[in-house]
Image 1: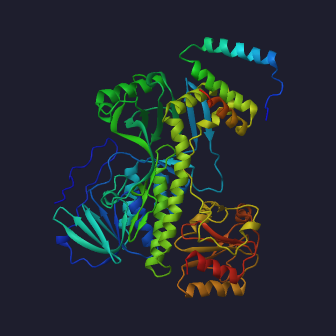
Image 2: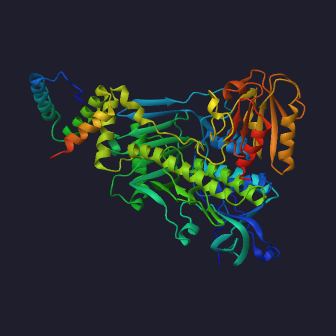
Image 3: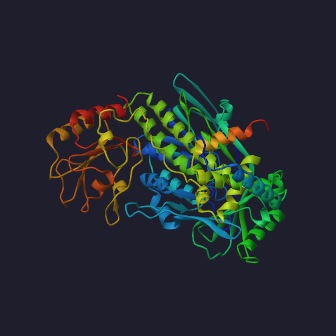
Length: 63
Length: 563
């Protein structure tokens, strides 16, 4: 299942840059907190716990 | 020789009475007993009172000579009040307690979550009422002392219990030396550190949380209403949680979580307590307001239960059976439900109405309740006192988001203690109309109170046995139904037939007529004339019919008492 069919390469690049600058903006002490907040907001926007679960599994791979 | 202290415990608001010890040397030879209850806390005393209600005598052993030290359990739920009403002490708590129905969660000075439980006109009691445990114990003790079936023995410490072939021998020590009691059943209501449990080498199952909380009771004049206050991650105690509850006599309970690594001994040093309480008062805008310490203690959250409460003739109840987190007020409130359940199950076995296997049902129902509480309480506990780095991060993310994002705020919900539904109880009818009902409490559910008239509620009339509540449309009960009820009574089953009528008449044949001019019962129980609910002696529903008939009533009654 693809929860977001509209994320083309330009969109992905935009997210990539914004996430990177936002992590820098949050700073080393707060970046983890920032990412967890972001994940919760994303989960809310998505509204599908099962998809979230699949994404967690995907993100846990090859750490 | 057991020598409990004769010095009244210190308190700035409660005058401890020191009772005289019961001494075997001053009493005759001890006959065999039916029930010995070890422990005179809320669980033990409610068990004894419920047993007495069903006609069973018991001996209650209290190790000390006075009520327990400090306020301990202070928040009692509506269901607890309904149970305490059954044993005759709820009115005293209503007179002296502080009722409430709202709670607030505060983060960075902002009220990020507020929960108001609406007051239902059909309920006699508030969702919560605060009173110190000493008062609760005093009221329960007064009821025990007034009851000829309860033999209350202060200064009696159980040293050892052994059982063989249906007899438990209790070795009891007193200030005049030891004596023995033989009893058919022994109830271990000896609290969270139950020595009976340890001696029998029984293991609790579940989890313990690392976080330690300090509980401190202070007397201070604060202009806040009686509501729950929870402060998350304040500047003076980063990452940790503080709770405040108002108690009678101008006392406030302050609970605060300790930074990891700090020992209880360090935390309970007077300077440490003072510094932290001052910091908390400063944060809420009352720096420098004078206060006085009454009592302090520490606790850590645990979600543990024995997997079985009945071990031959020794039965565990209350904290002796399980250790539940303080968040959600689950200790004493669960104990009342345990004790009420134990009271009727054990009485029915002892009275020869039910076979001994009814006790297995008690254990199954109450272990099920404890496990449900553990699942729910685990959620609150993981939010209040995150047990790992991951849980802490998520909690902190939710705190941060909650300042602006509505959707995370319900995560602050503390999931207050609520009664368990015995949905899968083997005592539930298999031949009723449960599936056809469109509302009302279902099989196994606790009762819903109903205001029949001003200051007259359904639960004022239930209890002490089975209650068949029948919705009447005329001034008499159908003959077959009357005969069925009579047949059950003649078989020795404690059963009352209560007729609900919307007319102010006395329904012929009913043990009691409940005048319900607004038909509130019909509305709340989703039932019309000719329908009926059967309540167990703990007021949980065990059968309900849209149209009751004698065959199904009698077989449901038999099932409910395992005949």
